[in-house]
Every structure is written in structure tokens, then in C-alpha cells.
Length: 158
Ligand code: 4NP
Image (tube, rainbow, N blue to C red; front, side):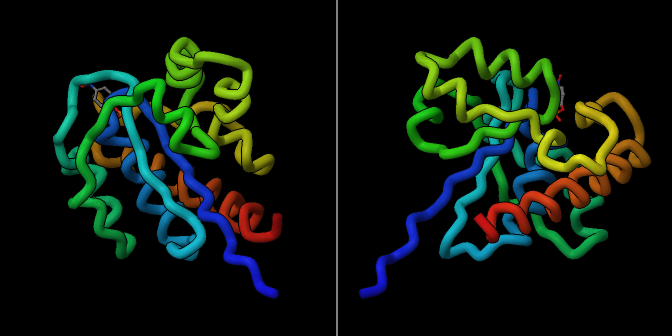
């Protein structure tokens, strides 16, 4: 008898949900089968609820063949701990902000620092490119693409 595989739900989280996490969301989703993995993103702040990603994130994604323009910003809330299996923070500040909303140990266990998934990446935090220029978005794209490639392989061989 074959049993249907359960959907794994993954959430990418940054501060504004317009620069880093929309890219992480789009890149990881593109590397995983959609019938087994649901990927979304959120921000810990409320600055950009309902907004599309930053035009520079949309541009760098488009350059590599990904359309993230239809994503819309949402703010992380405690109920997301019930909805998602794994919650990835883009940096340690995001990590701490998410943990503050945890209700119990089970919630805390779901939260991980995203770049910890790839030992070959030598930085811990995805830098916030918001106040920089397009080259920062290009750097972030490659960092995320590398870690997403490793993570997508790991998730599919579990
Ligand atoms: P993100 O970048 O956390 O990667 O989406 C930011 C976007 C917006 C702001 C800060 C960071 N902001 O202050 O509006």
C-alpha cells in the first residue's frame, strides 16, 4: 500500500520581507517539487505588509530566470509556528525576533539560522542589502542560491 507523502512547509524570514526572504523563498521553491514542499516568506516587521518585493530583488531574480514579482509582504506572527515545519531566519537579529514570539519549546525547535544549513558558507548572516546598491543584491542572490542548493538536496534525501 502506498501512503501519500505529507507536505513539508518551510518559511523564510527576514526583517522587511521585501529583500532577502522573498529571494530565499523564490530560489528554494524553484529547487523543490511543489507537490511535496510549500515555501513562503515573512518579515518580523510590519513595514511592508502587502507590498511586492523590492525592485532590486525582483531584478536580480529575473536575471537568473525567477519571477518573484507576485509575492506580497506579510508579518510573522505566532500562529506561523503551527503552520510551518521549519522557519529559517536570514540573520541572528531576525532569529531573536522570531524566538521572542515562540510560545513553547516546540516552537523554538522549528527556528533555524538559514546559513547554518550549508557548512561551505563561511558567514552566518545574510547581509541586509536594503541600504546598498544592486551589487549587494547580486551578492545576496548567490549566497542564498548556494545555501538553497545544499538545503534542497538535504530535504529530498531525508
Ligand atoms: P529585508 O530588508 O529584511 O531583507 O526585507 C529590509 C527591507 C526594508 C527595511 C529594512 C530591511 N526597512 O527598514 O524598510
